[in-house]
Image 1: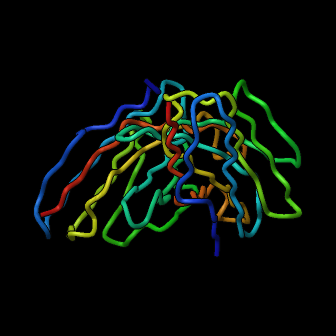
Image 2: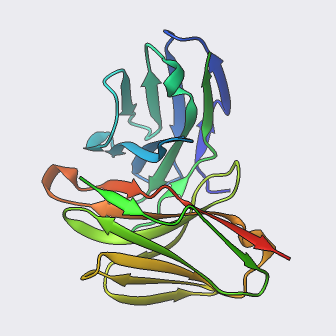
Image 3: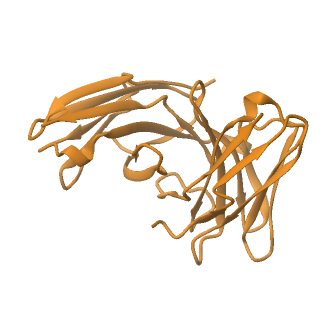
Length: 115
Length: 113
């Protein structure tokens, strides 16, 4: 158990819908990262927040948005969902603002299925 | 852009040694990390190399050659529980891109009894 929690564990929805994925980092960690893992694309970095501020963006679609709240939990919002958005979404946390050698602790993931 | 190449799969027997290679192309290189992921599970951190050379952590070692843009993960005394996917990842940092972590496609390791 990494100490990172994600809800829900599974989500089934229809195309065109909007969903929100939630992540609570390890106690004391200020950084939250979001990743998408699909069979054809592997593990893709989406976005990084540190202490409430966006620090880095990866291959995140404009239909997707995220934020980190004052209590440091984070939400990833996915809208106008398409079949291709079906994937496993991980969040990870770390204590520091993205230092090169730090360990990232991954949550158990949210499995999203878009029908 | 960034690219990481690693073999898609490797097989070995219990007790053996296996090496998983990773070559990368990236700008503003800040280090090479390795993660392990069991089926259905979350990635877990194994090791990190920022400088050339070998880092050893128990049965696992990781090597980096920055001049060759190459690294490897060495797993010794293989156990059945080592069957998993192994990902190399590079952290890229240049200006506003600091903090991006790019993963390879992963190497599926199967350990046979």
